[in-house]
Length: 152
Image (cartoon, rainbow, N blue to C red; front, side, top):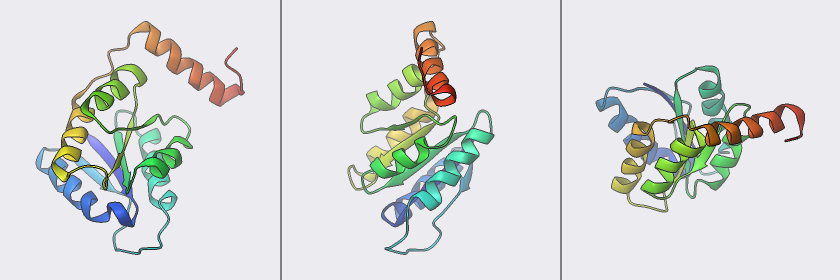
């Protein structure tokens, strides 16, 4: 599976760990940066392109990460067609996929251990969207709002 990833300076080192982990598992990982440490970098510069790549490539997933994951999730969600979920437990990783068909995961690298964050990534990637009618209906309402500014 192709996975697009972007972070900020707070997620830079952990991003390398995730890329290595996913590559060893056979995934094709595209790194949207940053590639060097800059304590003043701006996460939208890296997270938005990662989300844009996911939106353009059907079947791909994305990972955005920073210290808390909050800003990175907000930035990713500004891209049409992206449903980014801030994930902090295995249950939220599963529900993001099963209920929301989330295509981007956002993680706060400073919030959890490295080992646990890798479990969140693996859980998210391994969980399929079952396509239950109620969830499809809700996702379609969100898409309709994005297109028309109304859910009615």
